[in-house]
Length: 330
Image (cartoon, rainbow, N blue to C red; front, side, top):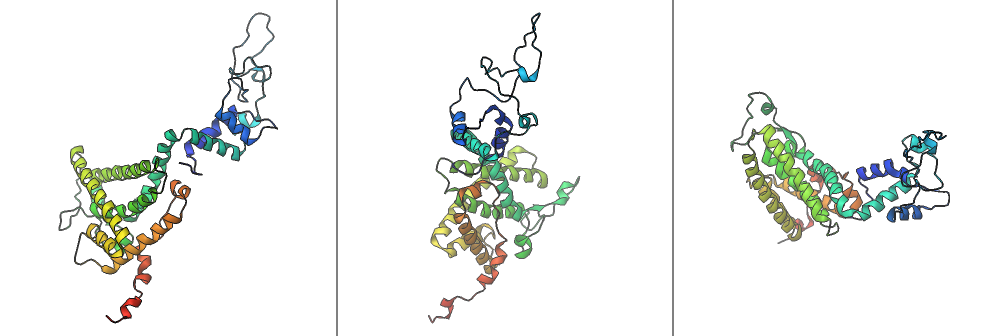
């Protein structure tokens, strides 16, 4: 994907290996990139490697680093001296040139590097989605400990933040999953704006990180040590995720009332006691964050540093404003 973001691994590799490119005073950045694009077998390396030593009797050659040539340039008449920056482990190239070399490398190997970039960035993005609904069950971590349960038989933990303290949702595995789905959905909508060849990879990696974390929680907090049991629940979660995509997409197109109904069914489990003001706040928050994501560049999202602002509770003042339509006579 044509982004300004460069994989940290690729960038580090270019920095470490950039000594193999020789830049003279008259060589421009453009030509240096072309040299990478069209390698020649006769180029001279500034990084010196020991060549075969002439140890024949009577030879005056000594194993001096300054006289050893690169194996590639063994037949060359001139050899560049080792620069101080290379010997000290620093790149002899300017930072801008190194960045451009990394970008050129990504262009020429995009199919190979894209999945690694997407995997690393979506790991950070998933953590941002999950932290808003994070919970813990300390009793389950103790030897012989038993997690407390609610009326539905679900393991109940402890959680902080607006979702648990502001609207009194119960910190359970299912609640964590449904809240995380909301944030994942907003990112998924933004991923759809990525180039068609790359968007599926970002969708899949984000979902993979969710399933990895979900499986860890099953084993750590809920005593599901058998892989077969965990797989059954993971399949159910995948079905729920597909339902969430369809329901929230419909609400996004048809209006806030439909979107609020979808949130009510998934997050509040269709409870008649659900706070309608909380539903309105969640819908307003989703609309606001989706607008921010729409206005952000691909690079801002793909960097993995995206942060959601605040929580739905910040929308309370807007929700409590009286609509002008309420003042009109029916």
